[in-house]
Length: 137
Image (cartoon, rainbow, N blue to C red):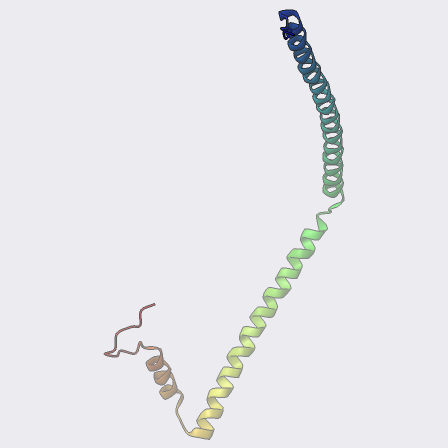
C-alpha cells in the first residue's frame, strides 16, 4: 500500500492552530501584564497619598513648633552663655593666681628666681637642632 501524502490543507490547519495557540498565549500574557500594571499604578497612587499626608503632618508640626517656640528661650540661652563666659573668666583668674603661687613656692623651696625660670621655659620652647636627618614616613 502506498503511503498517503499529507495534503496542504492539513498542514495549513496545523500551522493555523499553532499560530492561534501562540496568539492566545500572547493575549493571556498581555492581559496578565495589564493587571500587574494596574495593580502597580494603584499602589503608586496609595503611596503618593501617604507621602502627601506625611508632608502635611510635617508642615503642621513645623507651624506648631514655630508658634510655640517663645522668644524667651533665646534670652535664657543668652543668659546661660553669659554665665559660662563669666565662669571662664573666673577660671582664668584662678589659674593665674595658682601659677603665681606655684612660682613663689618653687622660689622658696628650690631657691630659684622667677626670672631664671622664664629663661628656662624660653630655652625649652626653642627648636632643638641636631645633625640627624628627620625620619621619613
